[in-house]
Length: 422
Image (tube, rainbow, N blue to C red; front, top):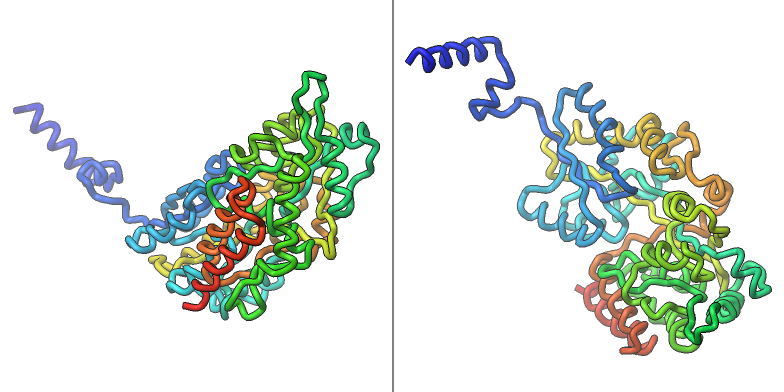
């Protein structure tokens, strides 16, 4: 009985002192406001990089920030489910394909009332947040284009210069595909291109740039129909089809790996002449894991035009945010020169705001600063997620030989136009 009485007295003393720990003990919640942030993995070990940046905001604003890192797979589905259940974030990260769906749902806040003249002057990629009649995001990930990596030693061994045109690329890839050890089996490939991704993200590397180089695009100007199955689109798809079925320059496991995996398993170890992925992979993967690899980067090949993909992904204020002003302040903190300088120290990228030092790959600095227009993001169009997912599946069937280039694109276009007609 004495022990019970002593415990009760102790608890009373603790409570009278206003201890948070005691409140928690009794099941009471902290009176701090909570802000929920959803981000994808921009680089490796993002949480450890973001947490001290977010901690600064927590301390200055007396709030709790709940950070969730969401895998790229099923990323838009996670948002749709969270919003439908009322469990979505206050601050989120979206890429171009996602915006139409969530803007039409009223799930993303127009930032126009929140932005100042200084914001428009400070943020380098702010124009890319203008879409569908509003300003729906502020750029956080930009100027990280798709590039074609090439092995300098292999290129020299076949007596070729760095390719400029599609014809150059094919000729080099064919000459580089060979049996190098004399066992009768091909062990060096022209192009380690991966087609095995389960979701449409690899269209970024396998489709858009080549389509733009051929003079094509995804949507017609009114965004009410697609045109990727026109002459330029079919030419692009046939070019990719022929790399496998006419020229046989892809590794036999092309359907089992993504482009990132091909960079790690085939190009990095010196088993292919060309590979394609993000320019940031140069420093984050190749230089770290394959320090002896002598390689270069091609921003874009040329057919009738030049072009390569480079996203401008955005931080967004969700309409369901409990305190929109507070959530927008957090966005500004995350994108501040100080925060981005810290983040890009760990994940080298080009600056997203004026005043931030360039910490990206020095080999890309001149390209980033002078070649905008060759590297470019997607046009935001309705039903982006559904259209691109269906197109990716059709192109995968083309690369497995189940459909011709024309059949794959016509099927994808029919599906897309039905969606856009609704």
